[in-house]
Each structure stands twice: as C-alpha cells, then as structure tokens.
Image (cartoon, rainbow, N blue to C red; front, side, top):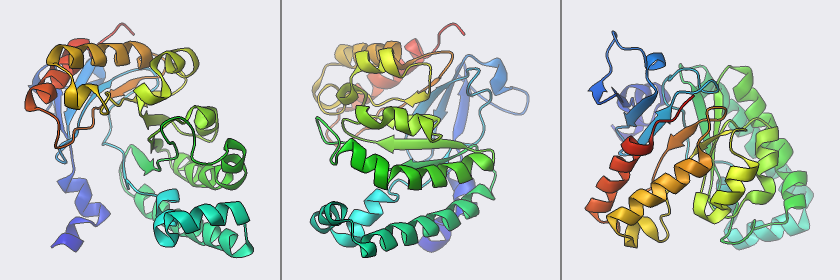
Length: 272
C-alpha cells in the first residue's frame, strides 16, 4: 500500500489540496482568477495562502516533487564529511557521481512533467546560520550548471520551478533566479527581511517561512501575528507574488498555530 501511495499518479489524487476562496470552498462555479486571496490547505497538513498576481496568473495544482533532492542525496550517499572532502578534492570519480545523479534527476523530471501539475519542487539546504556551507564560487562552478539543466527541463515543459533552501543563502539568490527558479522558500528571518525587501521582492515569488527558531515555538500569539505581518510586508509584491507558509514542529503551541493562520487571513491580501 505504501509503495502505491508514493507513485506520482496516486499522489496527484491523494495530495490534492482543498481550496477556500473568501472563506468558502471553491467549486466549479467559482474561479480562482476572481479571488484576491486563496487559502490552500493541503492534505499533508501544510497550509498556504496564495495571492493571485500577474506572475502567478492562476492557481493550478500545487507544485509536486521531492523534499530531498540532489545535494541532500549526494551527502546522504557519501556521508556529510566524505561529501565535503569530495567537493574539496574534485576528483574525476566525484564528477562522475555528480553527473550520474544529474541524469537520474533528469529522468525523474521527465516522469513528473508528464503529469498535470503547475510546478515541480526541489529542496536542498545550502545555508548554515550565517553563510553558505561552501564558498559561493564553488557552488557556482560545480552545482549551478547542473541545477540549471534540471530547471531548464522543467521550464521547457511549461511548469514552474519551486526551490527550498534553509539557512543564509543571500550569496546565491541571484543565481537561483537567473537559472529559472520562480518560487523560493527560504528562512526569511535568517536571510533577512530588509535584505529580501530591497533585493528580491518583486523578482520572484517567495514562499515564506515564519520565524521557527524563535517566534513560532516560543513567542506569544501577538508576536506570531506581528511576525507574519512583517514577513508579508517584506516579501509580498504584486509583481512577484507570495505563498504564505509557516513550518510547524512538535514544540509549537496550538494557539500559535491558530494565530499564524488567522494572520494569514488578515494580512493575506493587498492591492494588485
């Protein structure tokens, strides 16, 4: 049964989100294009508020894909310490592994893009708390062209590229946008709200991350709502778009989860 549920065509049916427009469930008579704000509650327990903008012109099925891709797979195959030494040594065997896994992913992309989704999701945690875990120039030389090849394959099939990365990733934000990422999910408080507002807002859609290191688990409900407000102000733009998302762990009080969703509804609209 588990194997069947992980097949893409089954995930399409099982993982389909529920759409609510202005508090009512959407049906065939209600068009997402007519709504300024849409609350999306996925069956996997993650809720998103998607603001319809010129960039994200219509709400199609959620972006599907995998949460652990490429870099994460490489370090799990080799072990983190060995993998970091691989990057430092750049042996021919290492480049063979990089290209073999790239070809695997291109085949994987071909299977996903044959299905009716709006986008394909990739996830690699490239940032530590204060910087990338490797030098930016090393990332650009080794990994950027391989990501570019994967993202090009997705874009050629008419799908959006969604990309998640935790940590401080300012140094490669421009690179990710350049090679085709259209929706970025980053740790907004770590990257910096002011920096995002100045350098990123309006260039790409931001799938937010409400401060899960401090505010969501340990703050008051009023602090949670204020954090959502500050995040929306920094990231939201009618040119880029915003997908409101807050990651919730087992240490988060229920009242803070409720406050986050209430703030999503309260601050989830703005003038086009």
